[in-house]
Length: 121
Image: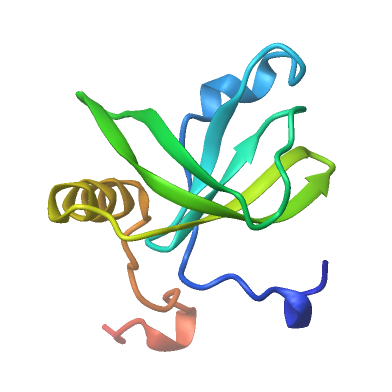
């Protein structure tokens, strides 16, 4: 999918990276999360448009449980899985997702310093 075809909203952060080395056929996990939805790695698919109940945990300093409803909006083969967009979430769940995103997103440190930017002595 090219950047111009990417219709997803919001920045994505990678979570639960440690599951990536496991056999995709034996486990279902979330590793791509945004404020609007997620990507669920799985070999099992439900039809696009289906609303599903989600319950998963993000592993940070402390486990962060997240639950709510989401709708399947796309299927993908490589890696195998489904894109889901969140339905209405409780305020507590929205705050948990925002916290996860803030803690996982790299902090911008500004433009790189070049020799031209360094002060002369």
